[in-house]
Structure formats: C-alpha cells, structure tokens
Image 1 (tube, rainbow, N blue to C red):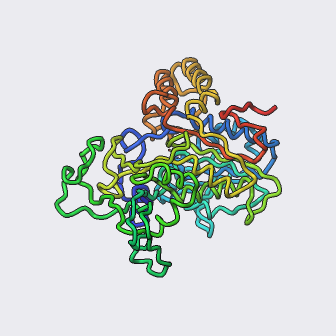
Image 2 (cartoon, protein in one colour; image 1 turned 30 degrees about the horizontal axis):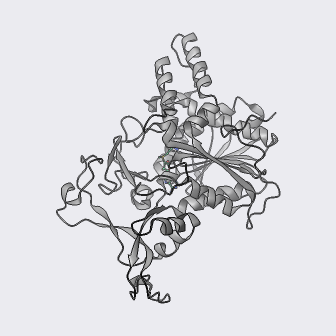
Image 3 (cartoon, rainbow, N blue to C red; image 1 turned 90 degrees about the vertical axis):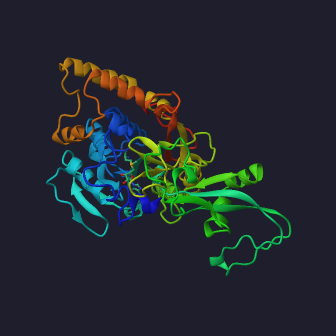
Length: 462
Ligand SMILES: C[S@@+](CC[C@H](N)C(=O)[O-])C[C@H]1O[C@@H](n2cnc3c(N)ncnc32)[C@H](O)[C@@H]1O
C-alpha cells in the first residue's frame, strides 16, 4: 500500500498517474466531503472555534495541523471560517500540512498561498506564507517532522487520511502438533516454538505476483470489482510460516486476542501500525507523554473517515477505486487508489496508551456530527444568500484563491439546488450513505469526561 500510494518512484499520490488526470473530482477517481460542499470545512472550522473557546480562548500558541490535505480545500475553508473569529485567528502561530506527495504539496501551496508565492526548503520541510492570513505554512512529509512543543496548542484534523495508511492482514489457522510453526525461514535466530498439541496461530496475508497468463476468471476477481482494469498483477496468499508481523501485531491488543479465542480457525484481522503511530503522536501533542511532558494538556484532534463505529475489527476491507468504481486493489499498482476501513477503536486504544492527558470521544456517525454542528442551518443561510445575490456566489468565497478552488471543484455548489443536494449527501443515512459510513472521533485534553465536545453530545462553552 505504501509503495503503491506514496512511493517516491511514483505512487498513486506521488506522480504515477499521468499528467492532466486528477485523483479528485468527477473526472478523477473519487470525491471527498470538502470537495462536495464548502459547508463541511466551515463546520470543522467552527468546531475548532468551539474547542478554542472551551479551552480558555488562549491569545497565542495555536497550531493548525492537517494530515493528508489533498487539494488543500478543507484547510482553505477552515481558515476562511476562523477569519470570522478574529481573536481565534490571532491566536494561530503557524499552519502545518503533512503531505507525502510533492505534486499535492504544490497544489495546496498554490491554493493557500498563490501560484507565484515561493516555497522554500529547510531541514523541517517546505515553507510559504498563506495569502489570506499571512500565517506561515510548513509542509512536512510525516508528522514526526513537526516539532512537539509542550506550550503549543495543536488543532489537528485528519480527513480521509487514516484509510490510506498501510494495513497488515492476518488469518487464524490451526497448526498441527510437532510442527516448527512459528518461525519463518528468515528468522531462525528466534527460539524454537515446536508445539506438542494443535495450536491456533495467526498467518499473514502476503502480496505475491499472479502466475503469467492469469485472467480475471482464473483469479476469480469478485463480480463486485469492476473488471475494466487488466487482470491483477498481484494477489493475496497466506504465508506458509509465521512472519515477524504475524508474531507480534495480532498479539498487541486484547481485542485481537479475543477474536482468536472467540472465532478460532478462519478468523480474520486487519491491523494498521501507522494509524497507531499517528494516533499516539496526536495524543502526545495534546496530552503530553513521558518523552514530551506537558504541564497542561491542550488542543484537539478530529479524525473523520470510514470504518466500523461499533468497535469491531475491520476484515477484508482493502479496496481499489478507479473512476468512482471498485476495482481490484492488485491491478495497475500506482494507477489505482487503495484504501482500507479505519479501526477507530484501535485509534482510541493507541491514543490512550500514548498519553494519560487525553480522552477520546466517539466515533459518532458523520450525519450526527454535522447535524449537531448546524449543517442544516448553515446550508439554509447559504441558499438564502444565494437567492438574495440573484444567483451569484453565496456569502463566502469571494477571494481569488477560493475562486481558483471552486473552478477545480466541479462538485461544489453553485445554485440552491446544488447546495441542497450537497449537504444532504454528506448526511445521507441510507445504505452506503456518507452520513452513516463516515464517522468522527475526537481526542481532547483529559477532563474526567466532564466536558463533551460539541458534535459529540456537548454544547458550546459559555
Ligand atoms: C484520500 S486523500 C484525502 C484528501 C483530503 N483530506 C480530502 O478529504 O479531500 C489522502 C491524502 O493523504 C495523503 N497521504 C496518503 N498517505 C500519506 C502518508 N503516508 N503520509 C502523508 N500523506 C499521505 C495523500 O497524498 C492525500 O493528500
């Protein structure tokens, strides 16, 4: 997944798709919520404002951090919204964008800073200045490059980022007695685990080349995956022996161990170690950690993505998307978007393990979150102001940067009916609807559960 999506020799986000083709939008492969409606980013901006109020309206030290910012649309909408709250706008010291793709970094810089704005390189990353706020923007390839400063108050957003992080998939098998089962050929240095009775062990699903001359039929590409792509170059096969990952990842959480004892042979599991790394990093920035003690926890993280909201562990969710259709994730690597369901419970677990100074709320359905944030009311205002302006642009994007963004977003609303369609799509609770499939999870400073954030059952602080 990592190679296919972000490798510097040409991944899906890092240069493999031909020039003139785009990942996002109607003519691309998928459409994301910020690209569907400006209201999405506006409500996330408002959510940050509610947290800034609840955490004592600091006059400085706020850092906006977005991981996986795509075209930069979401950050643009968040910044425009926060500008309406000057005291919060003044409290922002810097904006950080964590983006692995050079091409998308350039797209984001052009939107937020202007085509002509220079981008300079330093040890930390790439720098430019936001044209509407004059704030410094720093791009890094991973969150580890952003300094952790305990006095800072990080406001972090991750929208459709975690689903792009690489997963490992495992299946539980029964190993007969007296078989040296738990060691791979490459790992003869570890102690022998020869068994005297049958044991249940996890085996990793590995990606291997398909035999020459394979067809969709010979590979049994599921009918649910469009067969417009050529037969897959790769397939998943079960490892013959234990791998390093199968020996520790499925043992790393009581949730996984329970699946092994409950389901036994045939149980499946997906684990995303990078998701745990990012969640731990967010938690340490907000709540402090042994390595980065923080006198007073502060800041928030909002994670929006798709995956089960009931604590079940994702299985069999690796998918390929091309031109808005499901395709085999193993066909045309680099030209196909890859993603997997996000394990929100694992994110919650990793954050709480990383810091005692945080608490986690959610996940809640996107529909519930956006409704509590006032999506209906905001859309009604937009529609009214559009009618008042005689059909011209609604009461917001008037600056050049947004005009550029709107040109690029063929999905964004331009008439009352479009606005109506767009916001309703974001909260659609029907089968496969975005309001139900997508979830929101918040990490905030530990407060003994006394204060719930807005959108998660809480109200705006006085
Ligand atoms: C599905 S897009 C989401 C874009 C945006 N958040 C939106 O909703 O429109 C995933 C984004 O994450 C970036 N990305 C994917 N894997 C990454 C990684 N390992 N590190 C940093 N950025 C990554 C991609 O380049 C892209 O900007």
